[in-house]
Length: 108
Image 1: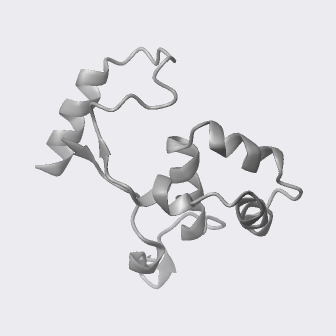
Image 2: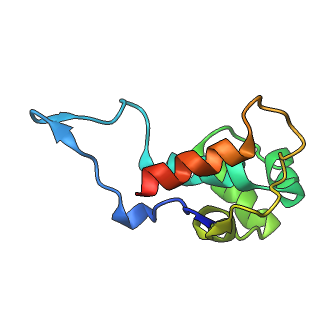
């Protein structure tokens, strides 16, 4: 079973309800990619985080560029659910098998 990648930024649109933005104000779709990288990142991401000079999307992008990190690898790759991820040593209290069951239910 493969876990889903983060949607490509170009495929995202800002839905509206009654002419009003349905996405939480202040949340940019570009931050979704950052969140995907943070969620799947490994030790290589530490250099980027340490190199951020300004806490902003621009600061993130500059640090990524300086560190030559391929963020598309982390954000858009399909991950095998049997693959051990960097944070696997953290006990979230949820059985990983249950998470896979929920993923399968969501995809059905």
